[in-house]
Image (cartoon, rainbow, N blue to C red; front, side):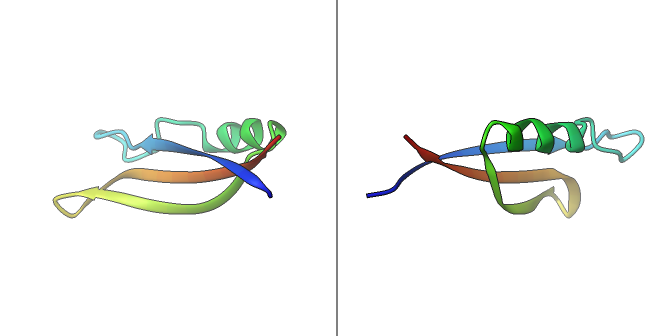
Length: 62
């Protein structure tokens, strides 16, 4: 039976510039090298303001 492990990474946006504080390209590349597959991305908001994103990953557990 195949077993998986899961991971959630969250990015946040700067209040001043509106840009991601996290280098998303670097985050995705590093996790991909470690065998993590991106399964979904969900924005999160507070009072209607986009605050960042939740990135959901999974990989096979050996």
